Image 1 (cartoon, rainbow, N blue to C red):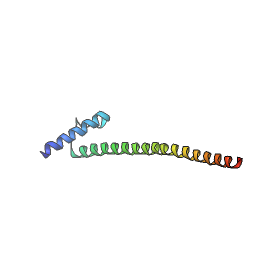
Image 2 (cartoon, rainbow, N blue to C red):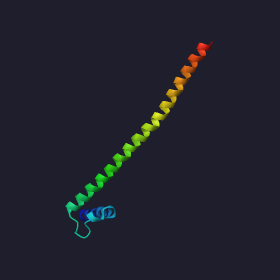
Image 3 (cartoon, rainbow, N blue to C red):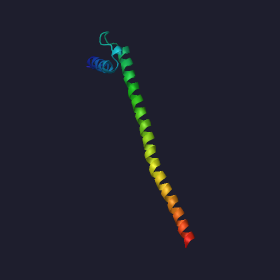
Image 4 (cartoon, rainbow, N blue to C red):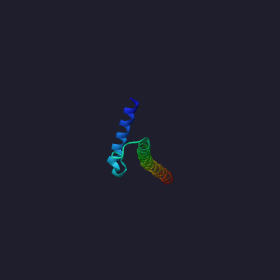
Length: 91
């Protein structure tokens, strides 16, 4: 069971690597533990990079979404304060 699962994982990761980076696949060489670990680490590093880029973009966009209402309410508050001072001055 373990050996079959190991070979299945190697072939699956190797196929994923073949799809995205064809020159790094090891289908023709025969899979070894080194190839498995190398492929696994490469795919994991790409996934981590994708997640970190996604979180960075999400943080940037979320910050922009938070800044716009803050600026609008701040400007509105300042305008209302000025209008109130202006109306107090008139009366």
